[in-house]
Structure formats: structure tokens, C-alpha cells
Image (cartoon, rainbow, N blue to C red):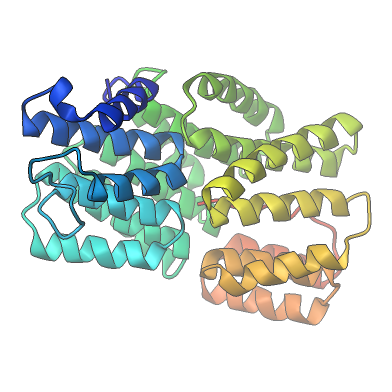
Length: 370
């Protein structure tokens, strides 16, 4: 069921087992262990992080399990469970904690090749969120993609490298996109990994091809598909829809574009606030503030929100949010300084935008959820 993405069924069965104990269903410890691994994985897939935390605590303290269940604590030899625990740290934006736990796991445990690939992918993924030395992280993603035995990590690593190159404004993006597209075309259209990768297609169509219509068509198609599955990535798509319609509103200030952007941001905000995903929450909130700025005055409360986000976010988001803050406060000197700093970080697109804004030139300010 897990491999077929039937996550809701697994969640339902998990609730039944927690209420009644495993003996009613199975006598085999391995089956229970595998089941609860899939149960927790399912919660992560649909984005219910708070419930996943509660379930981990419940399993650790649960009296219905007479056997020495592998989930007693994260120091046990339940490798897949440990990796899910680290993934939960990542999904709730504790990126450095996730990296340290994953590196410890790689150094002290015997892992299968698939588990090693998952750990290495998650480490790079967390480093991408943080945003330091992105060029090296992009190279490492490509190396992982080339060496991986799993098509899942081949593709995830490939589009992760591509997303960094796009964010940095690197050259030869069309050739790199063709490489990614060819890899994706070999998979079934409904495959989960296709939906993950195609979010970056949409950003590519917008940022590199200036083709908002093509981006919008794929975006709406995939949102409809995801709304049936309830996968966590749906809310990243809602954010991208907020961005796309904000950009359309920037070029054509219609009520339709404004409302579409506002409503999609709101959906991303409601979800991310509920589950503690501060990365998505801050980006969606600031996207909505930038949308409102295009036709109304920004309040001090809005500025205070951005300032607080700057204080707690890792480098990549911090620089994006500083750009927004200096733009909204008309601090052209700081925009010029930020442009130079962003160039040192190889955030070339961000640097170019900050430079234009420092000269009081008008341009669209994109936000990026890595």
C-alpha cells in the first residue's frame, strides 16, 4: 500500500492497531515494525508533522506492545525509523539537527545502499535549504544522481541540482532542463516523483522562458491531481501558484490575478502554520505582503513580520527576505550592499534584482522555496 501511495489506508490501519494492540492482527514482530515505519512515513508524505511527532511519542510510551519494539527510542537499531525521525527534523525546519543526526547515523550504523542514498540525499537537501556554498551542493547532487542505483534518488538529486542552478541564475539552464526532462519522460505520468520534479518545470517556464501561460497550464493540472492525493507537495504547489499569479498581477493588475494569488498563498499559509513548516510559512506570508504592496500601503506589522523572519531563517531565506525588507523600506543603500553580498554567495539572480532596486528600477521580486 505504501509503495502504491495509499497513505490514507495505512493511517487508518495504524489508528486501529494503536487502539487495539497488534496481537489482534499479527503475531510477527517484523510485520509490525515494517507497518509502523510505513505508518509514520505516510504521515510525513501527507504533511501531518505534528501528528507524526505525537505518534512517535505514543509508540515510544505505548504499553500495548509486549515485545521489544524497535521504536523505543531513536538510539535503537531501527534504521528506517531513525531516518524518518531525521526527515521529520528536516520537515519542521531543524535543518542542522537533521544533518548532524544523519551524519551520525552514517558513521555509526550498518545501512543498506538505499538507506545510504536516502541519508546522503537528505543531508544535501538540508544543506540546500540552508543555502551555504550552493555551487558545491549542486555538484554533489549531480554526483549522487550519477552514482545512485535508485531511480527515485537519481531524479530527486538531478532536479535538486537544477533548482540550485536556476536560483543562482547559472548559464546553460536550457540544456540542463532538457537533461532533466528526458529523464522524467521515461516515467509514468502519475508517478509521485514526476510531480516533485515538475514543480521546477513551472519555475523554469516562469523564470527562464518568461512563459507564464505554459507554467500556469502545468501548475493547475498538477494541483488538480495533487488535491486528490493529498500529498504534502500540494502546498508547495499552492505557494508556486501564489507566486505565478502575483507575477501575472505585476504585469497585468486584474482583480482575477490578485484574488487567485491571494487565495493560493492563503492555502499555503494555513497548512504551513498548522504543521510548523516555517520555511513555507514565511515565504507564503511575505509573498502575500509583496502582493498587497502592489496596490496598497504596507503596515508596520508587515515589516515587523519580515524582520522577525530574517532573524530566525537560515542564510538563503534570510537574504531573500532582507531584499524584500530593504525594498519595502526604500533603503537603497542597503540594497546596493546586499547586491554585492549576494554576488559573493553566488546568488546571482538575487544580486541582479537587488542592484536594479537599489537604482530605483522596477522589477518583479520572486521568492524561492527550495
